[in-house]
Image 1 (cartoon, one colour):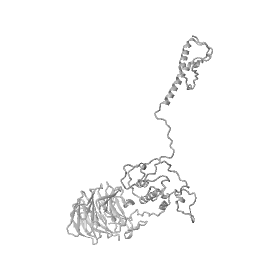
Image 2: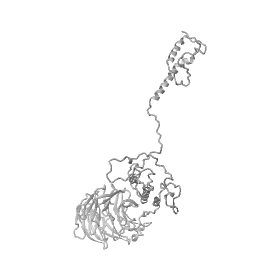
Image 3: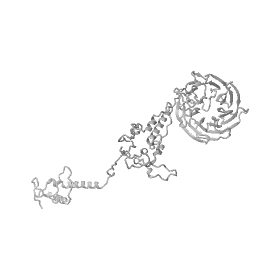
Image 4: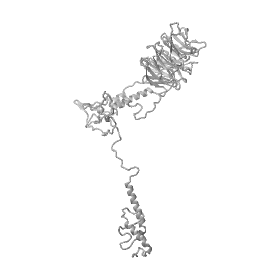
Length: 598
């Protein structure tokens, strides 16, 4: 069957083109109407019911040749687009919710802000991760001023938040002045009842998104107590009320009460001289942690053990006298009786000698110990000695017997002894890391403390509080621990960062001084009970093993393995303050000349 028609170029089609044209007609006629345009660059004209023929029997040869491929390509694109629109992808695409308002802020209603403020950690907010507390550094640091500034800021913050009242539910009769935190709408939590706490927290105590904007402001016309600018000046019967202290007219960002707090005069921390006012050379001063070779008597005479000799330095005359020299023995401890007239000397061979300081003659020698006597302590006429043989002897110097009572409790050398003469209690420390408290002349200890992890040599009884005992640990411990010997409990402790060699309480103020060894070799004055540093004194190049205090309590003397004795003005008069130059404790013991103790 022939095709009667002409192509656009006027040439007749060959019979071989009949079948392709017929196939194209059949396939195209069965295809649906396409709604998508053909791909760019292809011009395709497809009629729905007369594909393959034109109205006048004419057909474009170009459309006939590419019609099949173009239709198939367009059909695939349409099916792929419909598949993508009906199948969700890996990450669903949805419109993000639009959040109207500020960021999330927990509501203040239903919360006890006063309790939350009191529980707030001083070093940071509760959200701050906990970290190990840094050890207090030593040196020229103004700890007192820093602590005072921190306390002032804390009081200021509390005043700004709560004034002087605890947040409570505001009754209708309460003045609007007490309703600042509620912004005129929110309510405060009630005071918890005295009964047992509920098993679960109520829902109103949990943080939630506020229903109203916390940063909304009241109109000046509605409330003057909210402290916006009033619409008119408050007036009274007698004319305008010009109260300049009213917070309505204040230009300060803080309340009037906070201004008074910031402007109130504060007591300046007392000045402590950082250098010793006197230095004495002390040749052969032993660098031994377990010995006690320096003591300052009530007669204002300093006794020092150097090698095998004992020297006395008079603080009033600045004269040095040699008391004695032991034959074939060494001095391991010295201790003055309370009156300051006699001095006891412990030796390396375990002997205890008593000397008359005024007449410079030996009164008696007492035996009993089998090893060196490193610690001595007086309680009126009772002399107590501690030795390397782990024993403690009570000796009555009025009786002819060498000793009257033997105490056995420590497992290693006894290196610390101190009597509390008022309560009749004896504290002993040993190289076995134990601190023991003995009641009067009892054979068994009243309390045993095992809190230290190193040798306990530093021991001091507080003259200001009954039963308060301070003790210091060695290199592996570095702590000062305070004990209540009335109840047998630990009151407080602080890590000093260095070996604690000696402790001494101030007689004039509630302060304590400590001397240290590895690795700082410093003298630190602490304020009790806050244990803030008043001063940190340096100068010794070896461990500060020895410490003694003047009879008036103003001056301390320290000795070290560098063979020097240094005198420091650290405490003021009783009930007074030291001067700017640290001369508060000078008095009669202030000496101008330098010297050598022997």
